[in-house]
Length: 544
Image (cartoon, rainbow, N blue to C red):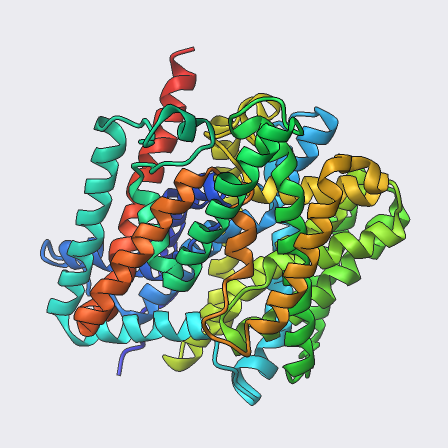
């Protein structure tokens, strides 16, 4: 019986090209709303669509293992945002004023992401084979893979929904007016209205009703409640996103950070923290090279002291392993919490050093993101009898492609971070969070406006309370969504809430239809608008 094709040139090339196309989507959405999207299912459907069409022209049949290799490389590229491109790297520029060239930036993102690939490889025997964890995101991709290969008409239907949503969102972004609708000029100055964005509606469908309603509630509290009060009392001198968010980000960041740390501690307490790894000579050698590269890049690119650079790497390895365990059991990548834990750890090791805090902590975020992504892919591969080594090669190729494309796209979208970020157009909430934590650790409460300190303390208390309450009460507000609403315009929050409500209505009325098509439609909306938005940015650069 012939061996099923797996790491074929076309499978790898398809994955790299799809990853290059999907990476801009997560860069764009990460800078807009601070969230990114797992692109495994979208990449799987897109690759299948192309090669099923090619089969009618005589191409060999596209296999499930080729599809797995392709989506592994593509999702690796798209998840490159965890390497810092939408959080610590822009925050570093805002603090120092230093801009990046594409190649050094790509090398940095690749280096910190490569660490995560080796951690995943070492943990695979324990977490995937010997005592397999659930890895819900991997299982969702696996179920889609089996479904579309078992039923050809089902594949065509999902691909059609994905493509149709992408075309509609892209056309809307290119042709429709982009102005936010607001009930009045006064409310517009408080950012209260609706943003006509298919991407936001798509993300609302993905995050669900609980998070969507939490965003709306947080927006009403921050922009509808605190905003007018700040203006009336003179604590903020002018209306508009920029002046208000400089105050509002402090309680919002405190809420998100404390909730994330509380939830992370609870997950660690409840998780079976057996992090045993398989240390073959090849694993040890590969990890040693990746560690040395990460240390060298910290020292050479950012001027971080050698001792601090060395300390950052074992911290990153431990946190990446912990993140892998949490993802395996819950399906939720705790990348935000990992970033905050690493910032706090580096803050104790290097007090008063904001740059060291940002970029040494970036190592942990990049490693954790790629480790979680690859373990989800290993879950799929193990179920269909794929080679883990070949998947790892595909992951590294995807990381390389994502690092290059992501760096170029970030620099094209945000040529002037000082002027463009933390604005209504580019709220960049993850950037605001990393920057605020770094400044607070470096300067203490001197970095916080005096009038915001009580609100920051209240946000911290609320974050701890919600972090403890969420697992006990499934209707509890989402702490992350509540805090996020303080650092992005209210109009974005309300549009995402409407998207979540629409998806919930469809799920209630037609659950089978929702299970088949919600993710495909949402992925299409996200991809369509973000790709046109990126293309417009490149067109603007070319016209200068």
